[in-house]
Image (cartoon, rainbow, N blue to C red; front, side, top):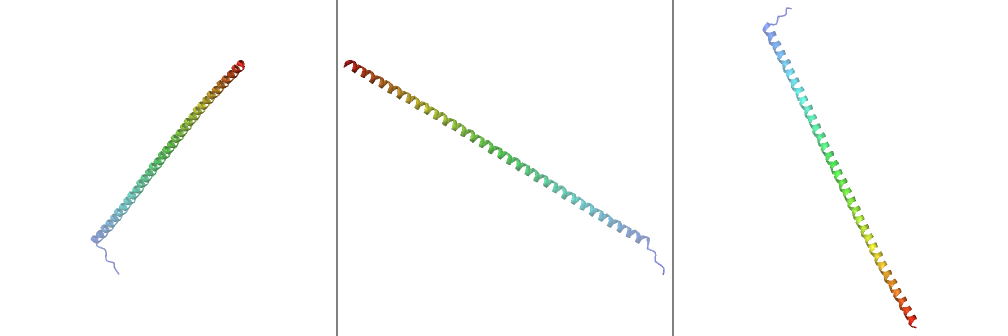
Length: 126
């Protein structure tokens, strides 16, 4: 049972085919790795974009809250000013009332004095 030797040309063809297959496999692996890297980069970019959007939303919310707080403070200040004005008006009214009362009292006193004087004169006449 003798084995027939493989021809040198046949060996070379088989080796070339194996090398080509290995090169194709390596190219496929490199392509897959590149695709994976691209996918990872895309995911990272998406995460960054989402993070930035969240930050912007948070900033907008904070700005809105600050604006609301400012508006509330302004409203409170306006209310305080209104209260102060009302108090001033009340004080002025009270002062006016007091002045009127004083004037009335003075008039009454004058009338009483006049009456007394008249009575005294009548008594003198009598």
